[in-house]
Structures are given as C-alpha cells and as structure tokens.
Length: 125
Picture 1 (cartoon, one colour):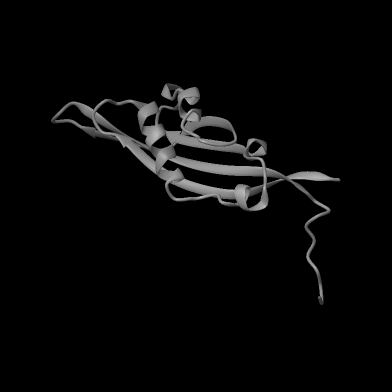
Picture 2 (cartoon, helix red, strand yellow):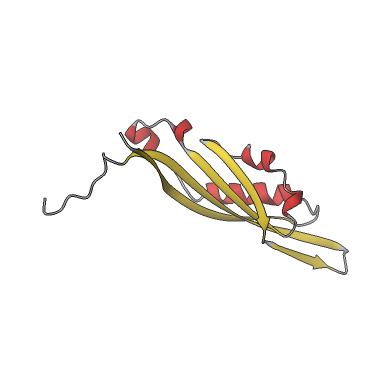
C-alpha cells in the first residue's frame, strides 16, 4: 500500500481584537471563524480515524511573534495541529483613542493519508 498525504480541506477565516492589541486572541477568533464554515462528516461516514488527520494552520498578523501558537492549536477540535504565524493581517490605529485594532486571517488545511492504489480514475467504465 503506497500511502500519500492528500489535502482534503482548505478553509479561511478572519478575527480581530479591537481594544486589547492581543494577537493571539485575534488569531483564535480567525480559527473559530474558519471552523464555523465547515463540517467534516467523512470521518464518521467512511469510518476514518480523525487522529490521522494533520491540520496545518497559517495565521497572518502584523506582528507574528506575538501569537502564542500553542494556544491557537488548542482551538482545533480534531487532528494533529501544526500552527505557524506569518506577517500579514492588518493593524488599524485609532489615533484619537490611542489604540490599535488587530485583524488576523487564518488558513486551515486538513491533510489525510490515503492509499494511492485505492483511488484511481476509471476510464470508459
């Protein structure tokens, strides 16, 4: 059996922290937003073990070093999480209030191992 890893889901979301300048909070909200866009029924339908799924999360914020990736990983209900923070997102400064609103974006990719031999396109069936 030749197992390969195949991406089965790509979901995106956005989140913010309007007053606390908390990059981790904005990142967690972006992940929750992305998760609320999808429902993975194939694990139950096909009898697959969800612990074999690798979940790769990319968080984009203006100051990626301020994201606690372990806290963000804890937001994921299934699979083995890998979280990385990169430069992106958006900071909106309110000069009158002296605050910065942090906006994060998240991309969540789910990968599962599949038997490459079990999935073939049949021609002329």
